[in-house]
Image (tube, rainbow, N blue to C red):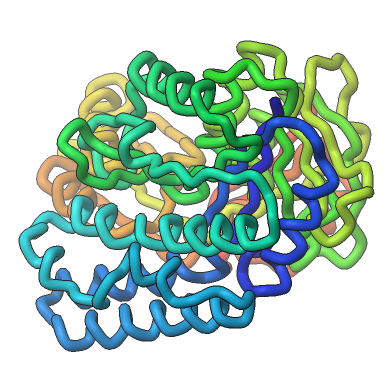
Length: 411
């Protein structure tokens, strides 16, 4: 058994779904296929959430109708009827979501529709083309807690559920949604943005599969984002440890939580281009091989927060635990930390939780902050590379070790 994961770019249109079907037809193995929402559907559904949360019901209905229409158009282009979409979103009504007053819970109920619709369309197309396929709803298989938008799976219960469902299935191919799970009482939850990779890794761990393949719109794992750097280099193989380091720094190819379930059972992870399925791509596995090229990783949308005690006390000694308790409670993701005798500076992802955290911190500290920043991490840096990357940039914070440089700069 193998796990294949297809991201939003690989199923963004009818051509992508046809290509997915061709990839599956070439493989005679039992397959578990984890699929994300189509294209930019998650972003579009986030606009629906924003409208609902602001009590703009008419706007929410209009936005949801537009999303439904786009999915129906793709289904029809594939020769399918509307039911593969309508059964997930019967009447584009938003009335059932009005009762969710808390933003994060509302978010998960609405945004999860993207994965449910995409997998329904893909399943219908594969079945229409003679593939032996079954569709499963991860809301009832991957059981989580109620930490909406960052739900933590109950690993024991989820493993039991998935093993029971997949081993009992007479079908060769199982279609699952990435990114989403569910509470014990049936509410949708999500695992955090880009959580589909994590879903694939968990399923692989539970089912003791041969390998995981993530199909992307890039040749494999590159040493830089090709949208930012003109000439990039393919990294053909890297260790689990190197992969974790890159993911933590903000590399977009692999989700940070993905590696652990795979490393625990020594399951190799392949990253391959869906446009060239015969290409070798990259593999993350049990190896001592080191990356031998500089790697450039951008983490956008950062906010730098600097705190100083109001009485000029020693912040680091007296207040560190208090500061990070506030950061944790407000779900801030810290990407960089720097301290002096009287100040602590942290760079965090700019999310909707930042304003409340600033308000809490300001009760006990003098707080200043800068928005619109990006963190550039260079692994395998040299003095020449560092000098080049610093040139012409406004740098608010920098850290250097033997092999790694980190620059917090204006976007």
